[in-house]
Amino acid sequence: MKKRIAVILLSFLFLLVGALIYSIARTPGLYINQWIDYLFSAGTIHRLQIISQRIDLPSWLINSMPDALWMASLTLMILVIWDFKLYSKSVTWLLLALFTGLGFEILQKFGIVPGTFDFTDLIFILIGALLPVSYFYLRHKYENKWDRHH
Image (cartoon, rainbow, N blue to C red; front, top):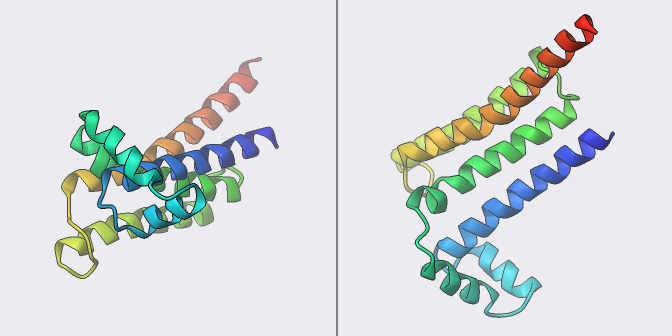
């Protein structure tokens, strides 16, 4: 139970950090910026944007990291739902999430979905999906190997 709660909290942390990066480093007119200003105080986002402009943040962190964090968050939540087990049903949902994330980015290239296509985003989305799956797969594999030898 503790592992599930920790993973859920980590998932929400990834979601929050991705949203924060997105809202601070992007244009001020985003809905999320309006929500943050409403929840905290008017001008919160503006003050955070001024601070972030003083720091030379790499473009991959501003533009691609939120995608990776959001995909990792979704992947972690799917893993929680399926009790961290990889079998046909859970893998189907994991692949659906991955292909949806990649698909939205690819559709941006053709102007079907608003936004700017970026190959780096595709790589970060892929990494965001594969890291949590790889971690729990390897952990399960080595826990079973450890149990058999001890």
